[in-house]
Length: 158
Image 1 (cartoon, one colour):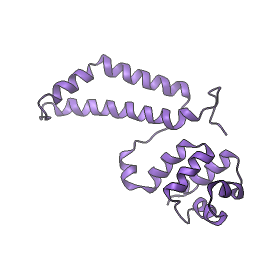
Image 2 (cartoon, helix red, strand yellow; image 1 turned 30 degrees about the vertical axis):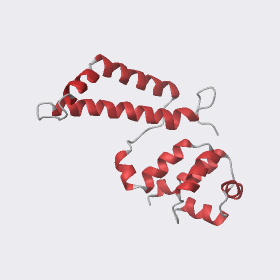
Image 3 (cartoon, helix red, strand yellow; image 1 turned 90 degrees about the horizontal axis):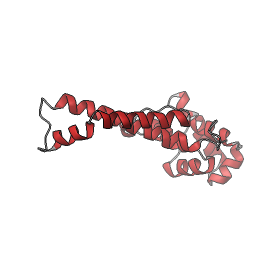
Image 4 (cartoon, one colour; image 1 turned 45 degrees about the horizontal axis):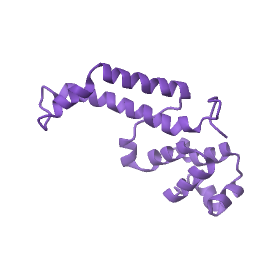
């Protein structure tokens, strides 16, 4: 496992302000197990990561864990970036507005009407799909990072 991926569990714990001992107690795992997860010696099971997400209040950890430990998820889930809440909201708004303005929904329905995508329709379909991926990516960024902003929108909650 790459070094930057191995420390995602430790970084989330430290951001939450917990010692290994206290975190292990809250997570109902042995301190040694938590130390092994944080050093990359073992990959934590999904149920432990789910508890980490809740205890550390770190939604982004679920995303990082899936991308790092599941090859299928890594191929399907888009790469996301931490952005300000305002930037996230504007990106979603702009992408949705552009999608509607370009008539992409109507074009998608026209393409889908006969139940198949022919060679003439393929480039336009692929373009619509790329736009939809960007909308989904922006929504995922909002879900993963936007929900963790403090009440002033100035940064991630500790």
